Length: 173
Image (cartoon, rainbow, N blue to C red; front, side, top):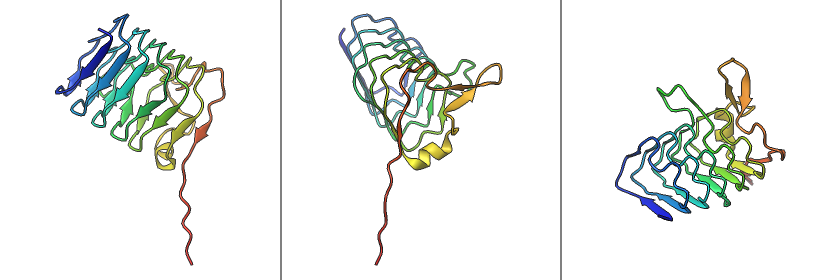
């Protein structure tokens, strides 16, 4: 299959579509709350990804080595956690080596982001994130590593990551 539309499921189970070499497009519908770990890992032909507005958590290595992703990645406002799923020992590396990604838009509800989440994504710049969301996250975009040393979510990216904080100006008389 080249296109998968997932609807009427609450969770996408661990490894459900991993290593599907011909998969090019994924649409995650409005009923899905959890994308499990390694769900689309190593789907190198994957070019287009739409994450539904009901998704709250994205698990460890969910899109690991999806090197074909080449559009703006939009993390919807509903997502609270990327790579930091309660009860999972392994964390992060969600979009690890997704080399084609050029821009990320992060929704307003994000509270946790795992280590190495966007590592070795060489072309990402900018990251668009609200000021309120940025304040909830660690200011260095890091999570503790097993050795208790902070590890950036963008480790190994060759471009400096530009973060754009949208703002509002109130003008009163």
